[in-house]
Length: 243
Image (cartoon, rainbow, N blue to C red; front, top):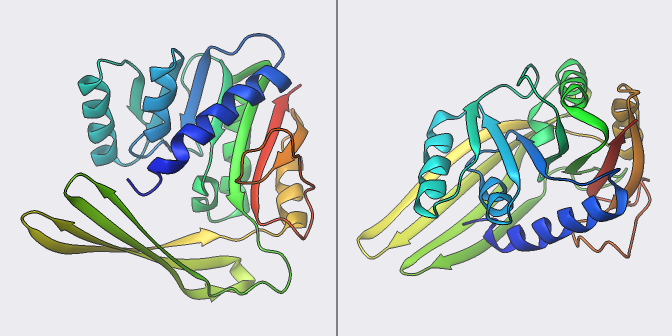
């Protein structure tokens, strides 16, 4: 629910990117770290052959239930973003909204890029989205928003509770306040995310020489307005193509 409003704009953007930057037709898709699979479901509904994997088996069960309810099919499996072997290659892969930042050191980040490249055909694309941290930005940010679905209302509060600059980590707290017809409850979780500025991100991307950077966008997903990967951009989406 929290990112539901972003799903259609993201998927529309994906299709425009496929058309503009991929070599050949895009039909098979891969999402490492798919979570509860809002994009797996959306892309499957558009006729793509989609594989999604994650370490959270509860999220994957929920994803499979959603697919079943909509009479859709996708290859859903347990898997680690830093070390996977699926026995096939794909036309495109995507990993958006900071999933990449859950990899909290350089070894893990580079391993992820390597394994994605291993699973893409030549001319295939990897769409990677994350928040960057320009010099001088407030490291202790917070965000709050509310969504409704029928009689269910959820208020999301995201807050950075601490940072470790030398380790390039921020510790994020998410609180979900859920109101339903039967009552109210609150869920809370905390986890670390790795931080990148533009220079650090470029260096990590360059660790996988099979990728070339096609273009950079922001979270407005406007294919007609490419951005620059510099110290001014925050909401960042890069389009990588396998050589």
